[in-house]
Image (tube, rainbow, N blue to C red; front, side, top):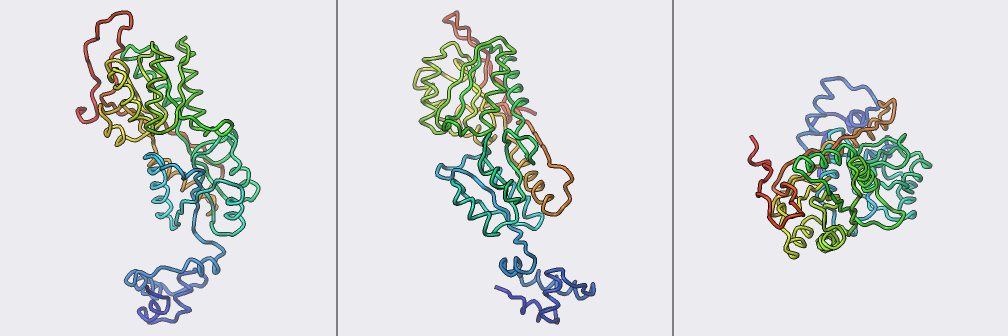
Length: 353
């Protein structure tokens, strides 16, 4: 691994001059700076993070706080993490994934001066992590929202997303639409689930239809449980909006085990997920693809703008999911007749031109 001395020898300057360029502590002649920067590139020199922090009181490290890494992260979470990491790297920062499940872990992070700022994921409506960050004055931005909309955040526009999903299903004649959400601990509900439920309830009220909500674990077993609950508790439902990525495959399998096919007996739209996951399931799912690549990068920008003093007001950014047709939505079946409707299908992304 190259050292600062190696860079100095390659550029034919003193170690002090290399330090001036790296730390920006003293003006260096342009031609000398160019030689040093070329040597840094040729030698693939990387500054020691501890030395850098001592020199500037900044680590240029950002923590991405996720409250629960015991469960396997889903595809959408991974997209958020990767896009935030790429966005941070483009602006000269490193992003580390930091599991924080209790106050002691949070205190260790904040008191140690280990990071310059934090991004928070899986934000809850009432989130103790946010309270601690506000009290500590550590800069932060949210991927999601608490009940306090004055904080800096980027988030999925769930109201628009659910309206688009309901509108798509209604265009196929569906009136009795259920929601399959993710089961959470009492008093510990992520904002995304609460807002998706609220948007669904508003949509059903506007249609004059009673809600049909099922909450299960975000697993294949949870999906099979949802299939049974829909079959037993809401047999008149002809379509489902799924806000539970981990349960999607299990739901389709569970319906099949009950003798119900998708989309002839039940249409499915999976919301806040990825196009790729929808294509992995048979039949391919119609999805409301989450804008994770955009939001992760925007969250990193929002935090770095705070750190660099280029942000006048906290950003409040909402982006809806995008409808990607698959093969899981068809016309609403006629529950009053034993005849099966003509098996018309929506066009999926591969056949659209």
